[in-house]
Length: 504
Image (cartoon, rainbow, N blue to C red; front, side, top):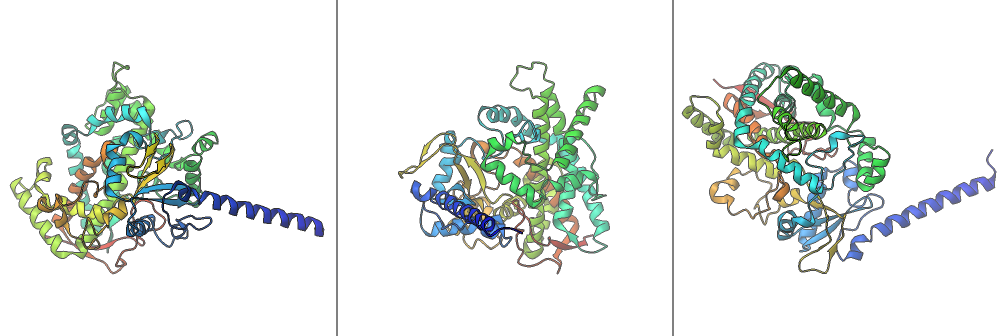
C-alpha cells in the first residue's frame, strides 16, 4: 500500500513535470513572435502539425493550408512549428528565389541528418553539406550528361517492353494498382542502372529487392519519432548512434553494393550503367583528382540514386495514369502524339524520339505541379541572413522549408489550380509561369541532379503503357483521391486502381 504522503509526492512531481512541459512549449512557441515573423497559433505539443500527427491530413495538405493562410495575410514570410521546432517558410516568390539562388551562399545546405559512422548510406549528395557537397556535386554531374544517359537508355527500353508483357497478363486478372506496377518498373530500372543487377520485380513483386526498397518508405511510428529527434538534436543523435534509415533495408543495399563492387573489380567485368560510372570514379588512378570517389561515397550515391529514381518516378507515373484515366481527352491526345512520333522512328522508342513528344512532357509537368514528390523542400541557414526589406535576421542553423505544394496550388500562378490542364506547360503558356513557381525537383545550385534520368525512365514507361492500353479508373479508387497522411512523399490512401484494355 502506498502511503498518502508518497502519493502526494508523486502527484506533486507529475503536476510539476506537466507544468514544466507547458512552460517549455510556451517559451518555444514564442520564437517567431520574438523574431518579428508572423505565424499561425500553435497547439501544445504539436505546434502546427496536429492534423498530420493525428493522421487527419497529409504533410502536403498541412503545408498547403499554412501557405494559403499566410498568403491571405499578404506576408513575405512566416513561422511554422513542428512540435517545438521552428521552421522558417518564405511565402513571397521573390524571397524563394533569393533563398534558393540569389543568396544561395546563406542557404547552401539541406536541413538533413548525416551519420556516417552508424548509417553510412546517409552521406549522399542530398544530405551532405558545405564543401563536401560542392566537391561531390562536381564529381557526379558528368554522370548525367546526354552521352551517359544514352548509354543507359537500352536498359530502360527493355524494361518498358517487359512492363507491357506483365500488364498484358495482369490486366486479364482484374484491376491494376498504379503505384505498385510503376514501382516495380522503376525498381527494375534503378536496380539495373544503380546496382547492376536484374531485380525481376515486374515478374515477381515479392522479390527481396522490391520489399527492401519499399521498406525505406514504410517507417514505424518509433522510426518516425527517431527521425524527428535526429533533426532536432543531430549531434546528440549521432553520439547515441541514431539511424535515419531502417537497418535491415540499408544493410541489404550495403551488401549488394559491396558484392557488386568486388565482383566487377575481381573479374574485370564492365557494364553500361550508372554503377560502372561510379566505380570508374572510385578507381580513378589519380586519387588526388577531384574526379575520384571513396568507396563510402560510391555506396551512398548508388543508394540515393535508387531512392530518388524509385520513389520520384514511380509516384509521378502513377499520378499521370490517374489523371489520364480521369481525362479521356488528354489520354487520347497523348496516345495520338505517341503513335505519330513513333511512326517517324520505325515504331521504336529511341532517345531522340522522347524530345519530339512535347505533349507528353506537358502532361508530366502538370502532374508534377499537382502532385509534387515532396510537399516542401528543406534548407538550412548557413550564414546569418537579413531578410530583404525587413528587420528580420535569420540565424545560422535555422531550418527553412520551401512550400512547394502551396506554390503549385497558388491561383496567382496557376488559375483554377485544382484543374488538370497540361496546356499550362505549352511553349506559349510556359513563359507566363513565374520563375521558381514550379519546383518539383528544386531549383538553383541544388536542383535535383537526377531530374533528367527521372523524366527519361518515366517517359519510356508511360509511352509503353499509353500506346498499348486504354486506361480507365476502377471503382476501387476513391475519387477525389486523398493523400496518405502517413507518407511525406506523395501517395494516396487506398491506392490508384485502374482497368487496362489492350489496344490492337
